[in-house]
Length: 118
Ligand SMILES: Oc1ccc2c(c1)N[C@H](O)CC2
Image (tube, rainbow, N blue to C red):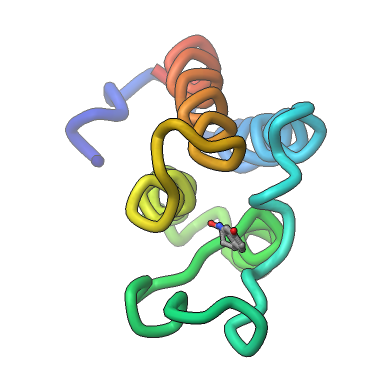
């Protein structure tokens, strides 16, 4: 991940950029399956199948707690967002409403993070 994020000149703004990017993810029309943690009591099999649940509200909490000087926050952010979409692919058919939402959101994220952070 570190090698992916080209060492661009000014990483001081990266935390603010992650917050902007996260806000765009949260307000996307296909974000609804990913806004809050999956209810592990209500969804049979989820706890067993998905080893590392992740969602946008948890990512926001982690960003709010991360320190600018902890330079790992950018990689952690990218890894966590991709975990949301990887979990979605693992648990949902591609040809399902939530499966399609996951693919759409991943495509949107890949485009925006490349524009904003690389
Ligand atoms: O039918 C269902 C019911 C619940 C969920 C899903 C599908 N997929 C989500 O990834 C996790 C929650």
